[in-house]
Image (tube, rainbow, N blue to C red; front, top):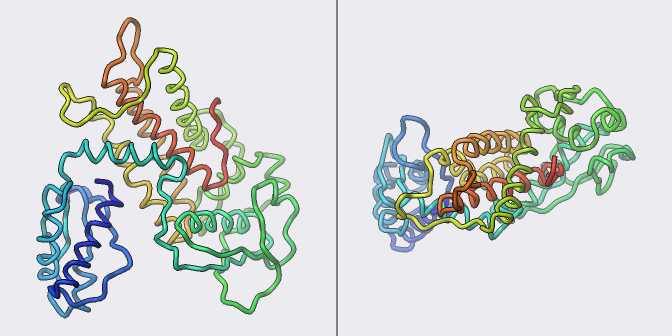
Length: 360
């Protein structure tokens, strides 16, 4: 069970409780499920019982009990606990089965993994100044919202800078508008699009403009062009390129990726893969949060974390056999994990308007 599936399972439990008249409260549009924080209980937690307590005119603990008995019987859920004032904590059954579900979802959805329709009812008009960082940020926010089902357009105070096109920026219209607007006003870049393109090129310029939170100054120095681990953009794109190289290497050795069934002995789900698998499972939630909070910087930091976890996994559990070693179930599963990581990185970069080269 993936986090998105768990969220839908909890939402279904709320609907059942309301339909059965065990709970009298409006059914929320969605239920937010988060990975349990260090020291917490279970794999995931949510605060839906606290959210519904007021409208239901019941203590949050009572709402949590009503929902617990309906969620606990669902396939894939091992245990449901009530903690604190009414939080629901979930321990998933057979973690490797959840891992397989994540890998299958990435393989099936490709670059669209993490896209959804949670914001399908929303319509936005983003308005920004004739300034390069505002323009690039507005375009990235618009991409994130569209990926979650929203609709809208972007407008600029004045005629757009012609160089914005080379940064992947388009503007639907310019000037003032009588309809309500969402202003996008990050700290200005301090340089024009033409200057940034000349110094950095489009990919490094976009990364530099989007990596920092909007209220922070963007780092737009020559470090963005460094071909080394100290440069987060290089590390993210190198992780993607390395994942694609593993697929080519495996083909030369005559095997392909395949996530092994849970319970094989010895299990091919290495402990070192856990951080990477968790990050990939959380990826849809990060994309949705980035859209909701108008924060493409969250996506950039997520990609950095995935790249870091990928290299830790790659170095500890090589997906390709060495020497005379024969490809095993472990190698096929490791390759599936590596390929999924490469897809997540490419998809995230595409939402930021940045290329993910196959070779670096």
